[in-house]
Amino acid sequence: EVQLVESGGGLVHTGGSLRLSCAASGFTFDDYVIGWFRQAPGKEREPVSCIVSNTGRTYYRESVRGRFTISSDNAKNTVYLQMNNLKPEDTAVYYCASAESRHLTTTGWDLTLLHHSAYRGQGTQVTVSS
Picture (cartoon, rainbow, N blue to C red):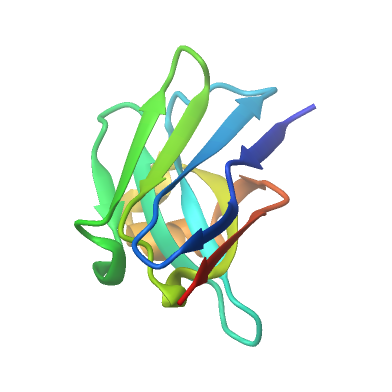
């Protein structure tokens, strides 16, 4: 059974940090893009960041660039999202997702993550208080 299980969410004050983890089972990261998208109440899903497993190339949405860092431990089949200097607008449910990296040849990383994900987790809540 394929599973993506997120952990690490919580409540922090503005400027605080959290580290999200996404542990995958039932498949390996080879030839996959793994990343995060988020959804706040009443808002559309937003791609946040992703990493290409084979190359280590990373992508970020502009609003988190310089504050968030994505990394992967392929031996553990786990992807991490280190989130620093958190802001209230980062409040959302964060979902881990994976998609075949071949989609990047025709689609941007953001749409690949949102529309071509083969697997998704259940989400973890991140709340940043002002």
